[in-house]
Length: 264
Image 1 (spheres, rainbow, N blue to C red):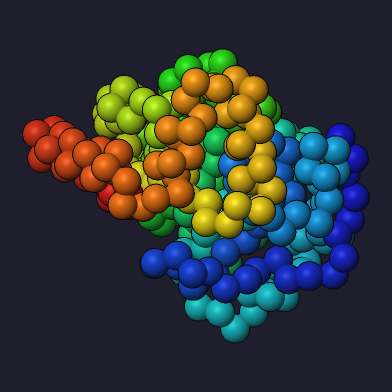
Image 2: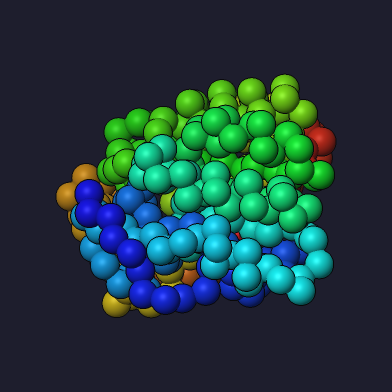
């Protein structure tokens, strides 16, 4: 994996997610290789071989935070802050250290368990939260769609450790891929270890994007008997699959008294 310095660009950028004004992506690119990822469509390098980082992330971020009131900052929108290179580069840990020093707090989304390394920092932040993103119970399927991620159960176990440490935990069940993602078993894994779960479908609206081509290739090669049915549902937001799943999830939510945000 090649690591290089990215061209000058902000570390701190505006965030469109509710409850967050700003976001930070410690890296440009993500080596987790999630084939369905929307961020691939804006990739500047081949993420399988080339990830970029900032020249001086601490110094630059310190300048960009000047004049901003302490608040919650989101990490994990365009790239995973705990992707494999973080174990060596420590860019995310540098960010968290600076945020803590300046009385900010962090809201993190990841597919890794490396956040456990940073419990010493997260534990000092008021209202810090860490969420994991999951989509597969079948390990073969996970490796097809998320080649460099860790197993789902490993993520969930790490989240359970985080909860025991008193850190706020959340989860993102995404993307729901029709006839592949087993939503109920995933909810059963997550429910005891998370305070809130968001559920989103595989959201691809343009047939020419890189993530759409990636998924179509995987379906053709490994799910030939399901490919047409899956794609019919993905392209039609009014497909009966989504209505049926949403109804099932609403019943399950009420029965189990879960804090679910269902976006299907």
